[in-house]
Amino acid sequence: MDWNAPWLTSVRHLGQQAHARVQEGASVANALQATAKAHGLLPGWRFVDQQQLAPGMAYEAFIHAQRCIPTRDNLHDFFNGLIWLHWPQLKQQLNHLQATEIARQGVGAQRGRLRDAITVLDENGGLLLAPQVLCDALREKRWQDLFVQDRALWAQAQFLPIGHALLEKLVQPRKAITAHVICWPLEQMHSQALPRSHDEADAWLSTLIQGASCNLASKPYLPIPILGIPGWCHENQNFSFYDDSLVFRAPRTVQAT
Image (cartoon, rainbow, N blue to C red):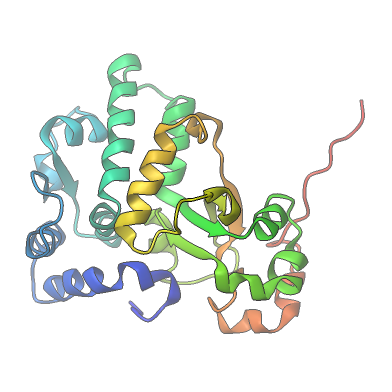
């Protein structure tokens, strides 16, 4: 695992500590729990072995009822634990929404709109705070504007990964890896200051999701090929990187009927 990778910057400090404990022989659950305890994180919550998940009980319902996070010894659950440590308010809120929907509808062949949207954020999502110009270009899939013409504006942007499956995929980076982001223009933050820490970003996004301005059930996400972010891979310094139409796809056209 390359802890110097730019997508791990926001989780590097705790991630390296938990990773070191795993390398010393601890289970992923114990490594995450020890890291949480050392920093006073997630009080009242525990990472536990996957075997503690009762047979037939839904994963999210178990977490909500027991305040325990079943964890396997693999990268997927390692990164899930890191996200819990960095986005505790958001993860608890998403878990509450999932558990409420499970209690209301049960667990069927399909998750339903809200649970499906939560899963997209939880597995593959991120938060992008950026100038309006970049948000508009991303929404309209104007890749040359987003990554080339307005490249200098990325110095003002901040991307924070949320999806643990996204981080798992980035262990072996591929050009086609795409994140689904909540993109929020800096200009719309008004009097609010740009989050200066992960704790502030966690609180800010949790508040946003609670309000009507962010309707999760509508999947308010924008897809972004993650290695296109300036500085995130050496190859994108050559602007022909963005000419690959299989990755940087044109917007869909609506055919007249």
